[in-house]
Length: 84
Image (cartoon, rainbow, N blue to C red; front, side, top):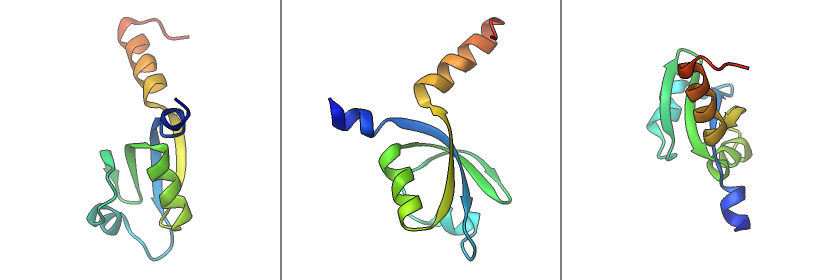
């Protein structure tokens, strides 16, 4: 289904734009799965639609690292010692 592909979950780093801090992002009902909190950024897992909304609303820059599926595969390879 095309809609599902467009809303694929990503692991990403969010860096709040000027005037918006990490605490403010965390206080918003954004539906993000926050994995790590850093002073200037968050590492999250979220659907593409939510990441695009953050960009559209100019709340944060989004650095997409990998799809959730790709990330899990990479972690599985590392845990078995099969890094490529």
